[in-house]
Amino acid sequence: ADATKHLPFENESLDIVVCVEATHVYSGPIAVKRFANEVARVLRPNGYFLWTDLFHIDGLDTSIDYLTANGELIVEEKIDITRNVLHALDIQSNTRAEFIDRYVQPRD
Image 1: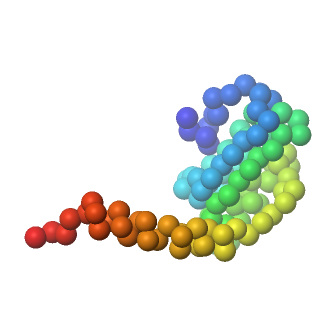
Image 2: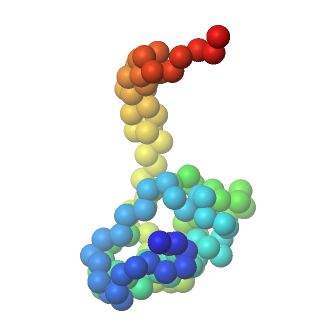
Image 3: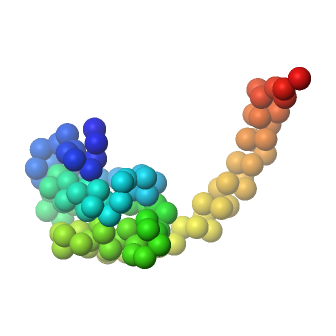
């Protein structure tokens, strides 16, 4: 489904909506605001929207501003997870390098 147009769920039918690293690829602030409206539509009262993504969309405002512009979604807690993400990438680095060595053949 195109999350910026219509989420395929009934109104107030979900307790939790999770969005991981997607809003930064939406086609700008208007699309992010449409998505936020859809999230608000499908969430039950007191539902939770769990979101993580790159912080800036256009360098001027933050995507958090776009997500909360409708007044229906509020920021209850904000945590910078950059350190955790970088640590996870470090942990996976050797495994990824081994995979590349095993399966990616250099060109002749």
